[in-house]
Length: 114
Image (cartoon, rainbow, N blue to C red):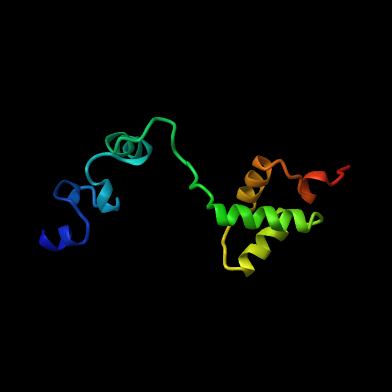
């Protein structure tokens, strides 16, 4: 019986021969999305506030602005690559959001499709 508990089996599962494979943080009875929602609510998070992004530093925003204005033929991905060469890991969607806030059109915004 002791070896079964060490292997992740619970006492009531020995008849069904099904191991308890949930991670240790889920053993409190809260499983899946409902448990995650309850943990966020207990931590004081506002409902519907999931997935908030961290603010972009002013240094990065200034670099994005400078690269976009000096190289107006570049798109978001090209600016992303140049920032990566400089040691800054920023997503293309973050670059798009910063440029949109600064009201700067990027090459990928002005391209004709069709």
